[in-house]
Length: 441
Image (spheres, rainbow, N blue to C red):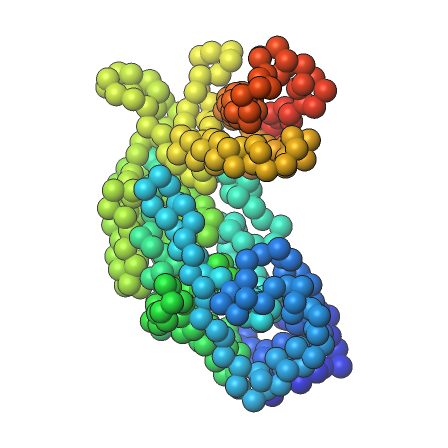
């Protein structure tokens, strides 16, 4: 169906699409491309971040908006004539850990608008299909909901083993062929699928050279998380629910956030079978599990006692930036499941804060960057402020206090701050105190 303005706005039609997708699970949508009209793309433009980095065209949000109507009319005309082709993304690298960097693609502003529109349409269709075990990049769901689900499962269900899984370079190795086949299960609009195919093949610019992409999703844009969820819905979630669960002798549970997931198992035999089945399943779709980071651990409530009896450290596992472990309750005599900021994430947060303080100490007056400092600390508490993590929040607070004192004293040799003067300053301009934001109990 050609692109055109509709009498009913796209924003009004999306809930109707969602309702029909929910009522008819096998329905294939044959007319979606026309929803990418001028008014809908205007809404997508307004939802974009206004201070985000530009792509290879160098066009900012503000610059594109100076002639917004004209630009959007031109964009829709090119999509109508199938002349619209996404530009290659500008590849940048951000720190993943101390030794590795994560590649990101920065799309052009116009491509961000179209990606946003496609993503919202896909969400209307697929949100009805996604299972409850999936939490990443979905409306009204967050990483803290995933953490709460892990807590409830381990505390209330007969879980004795946990499978930690790590997919090697997931976003860079998604099969385009398989992904398009999965999209065709629900979508039969050739114009809409052509747009997605062009985004997948757009490639990226690195060191001035164009690199074509034969696999992987455009990580860094608005479309990548949705495509990843669709891919893993078929590869993992649905397969686990329909094929793995019925074969198990005991209870098994899956919690997934984007490409990070855990499988919690009752019986050891089921854990062994599931782990091997996972490897075979991902191999079919040209993906591999990391040999060292994918492991099965015993994790029953008696884990601390078993570890003590066997002369080893109690098992723990990492998920979404937290180390999960068993600890003895305050009353004593029984163990409670809890979590703390993982060592890697804590060190990374402290290192980032230290580098920022060093760079900003002489940039402007203290009262100006102090406001940014408090925002950064609140952001840390907003993510890591979960039940059981109060100790690590306090450690972070005191580490920041000492770092701030150190860099205040390095602004000049004349005006030195002793600890007493610094504490007096904090009484007048206090730093945000650590607190639990997300309570699981």
